[in-house]
Image 1: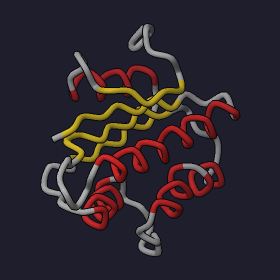
Image 2: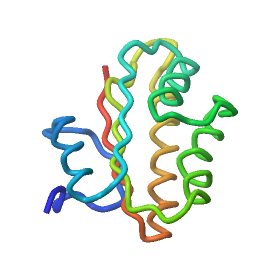
Image 3: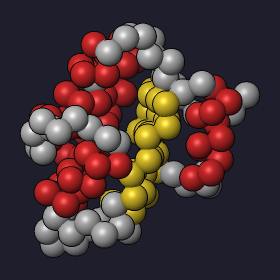
Length: 131
């Protein structure tokens, strides 16, 4: 059972997990695998643009944290039953334009999404790393 030691609804550092292992776990579990490499992002707008592109959000995505939350929850929920999610935010920037507060706001969006899906008994595991 992949990820048996990881709570079903959590946001945590990637730690010892490798990207390929997480993708394989998503496949084995039949979950969606959402991957965003943010290594080239410098600002909040860059981060939102890269997540939107790599997660293939709709063209009308508002490119703000509220819209990010809506895309990770309500829009997906309305599209039908969901099997679960393994989400990866790799190389979140750590610089003056995307400071600690911005990083915490970003991770809070994913924590709120994990809570949203937990209320619906849908696994939502989000892993992240910093650049």
